Amino acid sequence: MFIHTLLTMVSHSFSHKDLSIHYTKFGSGPTPLFAFHGFARTGQDFALFEPYLKERYTIYAFDLFLHGKSSFPKDRIEEKPISKIELKHFFEALLARLSIPDFALMGYSLGGKIALSLLQLFPNSVKEIYLLAPDGIILNRWYNFTSRTRIGRKIYRYITDNPNSYFTMLRILKFTGIIRKKMHTFLLDNMKTKKKRELVYNIWRTFSLIKPNIDVIQKNIVNHNVTCHLFFGKNDNIIKPKIGQNFVSKIPNHSSFHLIDCGHVLIREQTGEIIQKIINNEKINYHNH
Image 1 (cartoon, helix red, strand yellow):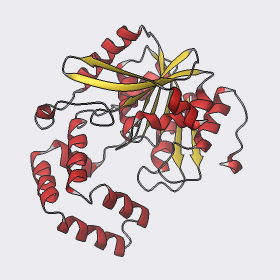
Image 2 (tube, one colour):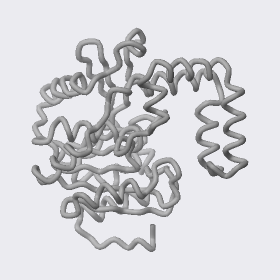
Image 3 (spheres, one colour):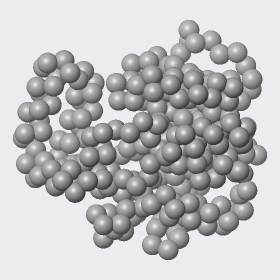
Image 4 (cartoon, one colour):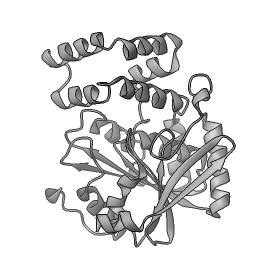
């Protein structure tokens, strides 16, 4: 089924001013769903969910800027990263092109920050949102420092060219138990080559101005009767479940919280099965997840 979905996905691109984004479209449901993937991934990841979502949603699975086939002007990364108002204008143009008045959202990890921002920017249009270990609910101090301050960017540039001090620090943090093995592996894998270190920096910098206002978003959810479903991995050391629990505690009548027996990788069959049960208003047996 997954391979069949990949073979039948329809590829599209959309450009507005100097920005270009690629997306794949699949499913045949009446409600458009805009889906945004995680760091260093592509929109094709969401093909795994097609069997579970296709009756309710037509899925538009985007490649984020600097991922997959989506581009971002190289000369803008350092001095003019994408702003929230620019993101709004871009999607206003896309919605007009597609003739879509209302839509649902899905965001995983880094993509969660984009989904949350669109909920903030289009409160009258979003009817439902699925957040899978979303970035953007709380501010990551290290990310904020390295992507939004000049001194932080200089330090990261130094690490890019001279990584040994970074690798030494990681070994110490792992040895002392400050970070766990999975977190150590995650940080090491994304920084082990200069090409990867530069990609991390470029992506962080490109999205550095996209900061969801959680207070506004929670008010939008309540005032516009948006249904919000949050999914977290029980063993996730990157974006911890407590973040989601605190989020839903502020909007208990408009949200659901789902804890899955896994780590950070939430684009998996278990998540799709739960979403399908939510769509069909079926009871969820967490012993199977």
